[in-house]
Image (cartoon, rainbow, N blue to C red; front, side):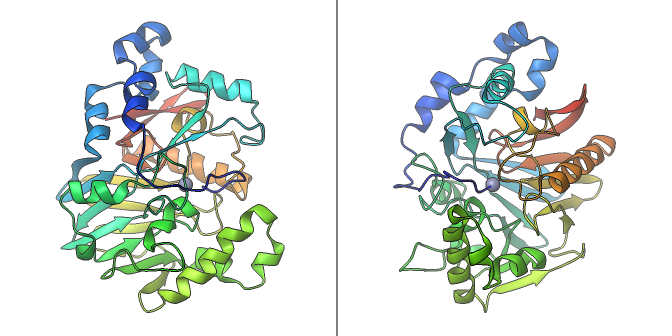
Length: 339
Ligand SMILES: [Zn+2]
């Protein structure tokens, strides 16, 4: 996700997170059901379990023999902006948030990277906002939660990147001019189409002003990591049990990941859908940061149809923590049902 007005990070301390959690973010699911009817619960993060996971900062679960640890990197309180969704008004946006039991005075955007232990490797999927480099004052707390989960940054062998928006890659490196690798022993696997798009020296001139700092930072960061970075294409297994799924639209090389072990499957959606209360519920809504919104919508519908048909668990980078659950058909759209 990257959008005009995406906030500069500050200190990454996640100030006030718990106040949001208790006061505004969580209403009991019983209360929600009373207000919204049965369907309301499907998009609702109202469980004591979810609250506990957020306070702990990580949430561990199994996909067959594979262990997944969702890491809470904090949350951005995005101010409303009429340009946020091209084909929905701020009032419609607020109504959709309200219907899901979420606060309506801003859009809550959580960030959830995952660690996947598969095939003897420790794999980090996306890297968070970089300890306050982007995502606002309440984001940037992933590293604290990585440690709380008992995982050493030096032990991460592989990093899979879904796309190059700042909230997904700024965790790779400390900020300039230090530019130190945060995961010194990891091979970094990136989608070739994404790399090609962002690393083109002619790109910066062609981008709108607001996107140029991101492109400049990408073109500064990746050459410094060139011994570690490997581009991938197609759907060949990257790590035993993990394959990429081409999911273009949100960005030119945006990629989801299929994790499987025995009969159990998980699809790491990345930004295929942003906030589920908005874009899973209304898959035809076009977020400003979907670079090709038409392709992004087609990708979103295709992947959501697949996980409904095959009953595959999903995790979404901007889904309410711990960001894992299943998808159901719900009227003209879909509903996210947290575990
Ligand atoms: Zn994002």
